[in-house]
Length: 223
Length: 216
Picture 1 (cartoon, chains in turn blue, orange):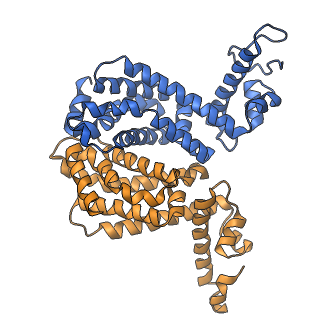
Picture 2 (cartoon, rainbow over the protein chains, first blue to last red; picture 1 turned 45 degrees about the vertical axis):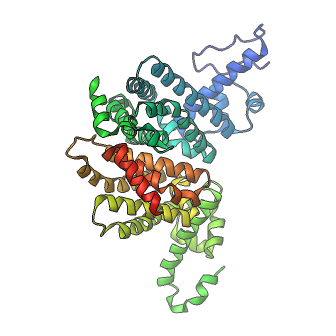
Picture 3 (cartoon, each protein chain N blue to C red; picture 1 turned 120 degrees about the vertical axis):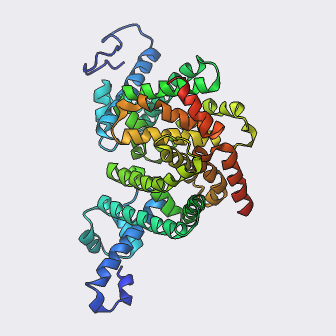
């Protein structure tokens, strides 16, 4: 069992040397460490400039361990990307489910998303703007991650006065509008201001379902 | 390798042909990247497609990346010229944006490689290229500003045109990523709905959507 190498981060890792942790626990911790390291380094250096050696050094694992888990840098990055998307969706979902009524739920979910992105500007930029640098497979993961938000938006259909006549693509449109607003802010290097964008992203979410007048009213409700 | 030049008189060679050979290379770059992907594209692929020599390539460009940036700028100008020629002259804002959208969709369906380079592959070509793409989207977005006139004096969010653009480009992106460029024209009614809805609401936008669906 390879001992953890490199002591740069103060994150928990299994005790060195002989110990009694089951191998699958060690493996899982190594994998998680690697995925976190991958996102951090790619966000810092860019995808193209990042090497497998960077990843193993940062995660404190051996090359052999790396290749036992992943075929290459891309496979590792894609898994790391899914991890980030998973965490974001979970956060949105928790905030969303805690509220009653679709507009309030949407507001809470969007606020959680904006806060999460503002906390880690480099990761946010990687996740939404620079992800294409890692190639078409990564872009597909990005679009798939966005589509995971569909249920939160689709609830608007029941709330809309004329929900049955909306195009099937309505949730994708709203998601695209929200992603556009956020990406613009990230491209301008303004990640820390994202929480201030809440009114606009909420308007963009509501407007295809209930129209600009009602959307503006809902946005004004709690401001 | 020099097959393109055979049709030129030797005296033209240094002057006019130099410019047109540069354009040939740019057009080849757009095609090759659209079919192979940016990362997989090599200078050798591009000069083979363009029918020019390596020397000619490096006379005009430092490397693949510089050539791609120039090609991308040319692509944006071409799409723009096409869009504006179909938009200007239309009497209403609604007609203008509808024409513009229809033009882009048709252009992309006719030339899937160009579409893929323009929307999908540009992301793989580095930060500068992504900035060019972003600037192009912003330029199209400005066209949408006129939609405010339709809102009966209601106050709309400052960046409402960005919402429209985001919704439209998201739908187009998904189609292209899935290799469905040819199906884009069928999506025109939905795209129009996405573009209009922040300004005029779902009921009126759905009416426009049905009107366009009935004519296509």
